[in-house]
Length: 462
Image 1 (cartoon, helix red, strand yellow):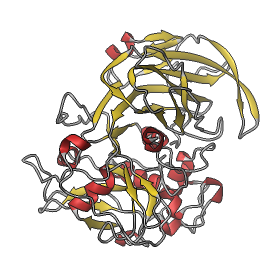
Image 2 (image 1 turned 60 degrees about the vertical axis):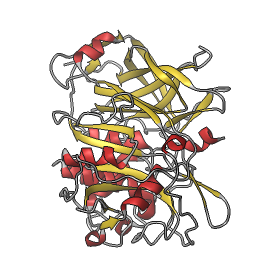
Image 3 (image 1 turned 90 degrees about the horizontal axis):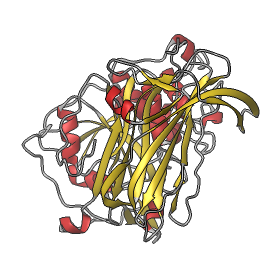
């Protein structure tokens, strides 16, 4: 879930010269939850039927030159070769952008790329877009979604976020537009209203550069997952499979979010608020990428692990007022040249396949104290990094909600883990309903490292 924050999960609504002319700077987030005491009340029955909990999911992205040529370009050019993507060529026009957080009005040249229509063979109730791009100084981008509903009507272009790696030209922000009566966007997630489903969609990306300059953002990947996950309090029990990652533990750096408590209140103040950027930074550094000296310059030299402060600043969403915007976190990772995707995985089998391929996975979940042995807290939404599995199939996690870096490594029981991660709702001790993500995860990797084949091509998780 989004990190230590107070917004309910997106699933709630469902339930009711032309190239870069500067270096990359940070950008990017989803959340971690408040850690308060409370007795666990949920022991979901392992007998929950598979049919009652079956999710449909379809992830698709556009990332090759062929992909971009198949779309509609206005003022942008596809660059030949792997991972080069698209940039502004001869711009489609000039516009003025008012930044409500910087209180500035600046002129930008722009170009747009619109994807082909992507049709679904099921009715989706939730969608999240994500992208991989670099935005040198003076540039930024906007991502939009146009969903075609079950009755053939379109939502119109819904703004999914304004993003830049740095925060000097614009302040990155979600917009959360309504698409009444069909649904609406909550920070980073389009969720349909009851009775409505998505049957097809397009994505549109607008690239901006300061008027009269020659630089450009470079976008090399944009995609989305569409899913339909039934309301479920329990999920079928899984067992390590033949492609299991049993006994594999990836050497992911360990960072505690709690050692940052009270730091930089302008970016949500560290501690429990920073689970998402802390998890993202662990994975970024696993791949050998680190903030530059220039990016680190603002951090108080007395602070431990200054790269986590960089990640928090670079994932902060000024509208959401937190570091828990999911695609802003993977966007931050992409500012180092990595690919970042927000996906909805269907089981720990998916995670095992990724771990076996050497790819750590950041997952989002919520739970009460006592539901996860060894996690002595409760959360409305928390992110951590799966780094491996024991030989018995239990989950090895770098949990940033720890008091020191050496305490970050934890082993959580497989059954407890999959329940709190894959469910969509549960009852809290006070009788209120808690909400889960149904399997949300970040997948971050180098562009030239292939993902393993999807387990179920009819339900591609990536």
